[in-house]
Image (cartoon, rainbow, N blue to C red; front, side):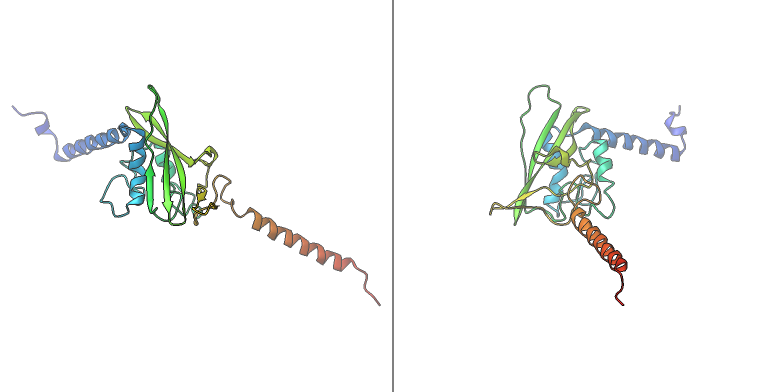
Length: 217
């Protein structure tokens, strides 16, 4: 007696095997991490260790298949604003940090949302990004990020820009290479544009007045 599987064409068998592998991969993605901090660490870790081995979750190289993140964050990270969001959307910088700390959080029983702070250290200072992590499908998935105490700088309020950097000297600034967050692609250029328009209008006004003056005989 032959089994049912032995009568299937080889191509059909491999197609079925591929489907099973795909389902297993999706299940692994949606399971999430065991804790909110572990979910964030999986996402941001490769950004602090560029030499890390091959992985299905590497925000530095753009591989997000196995990252513990929600579907909407996966889509957002895969679609930066062309020509504007020139840095990494996860780290909000163009350069890897010299130090990266992921805070451990304690949640009350039944909590399904956690805010995990990450500190990104550079030679010139440091800044903090808060990651919003949600419990879905029995695990924790990163869903959003914003600069510390500023939910308006959400990654879904493009263009995603740098977070304010504090230095040991007490000053503040922004890591170079990315526009400010949340005012559209033109943000960061408003003042120069306004000055340029003002100068153009002033020049046009002077030209018009010169034409209106009566000529001397």
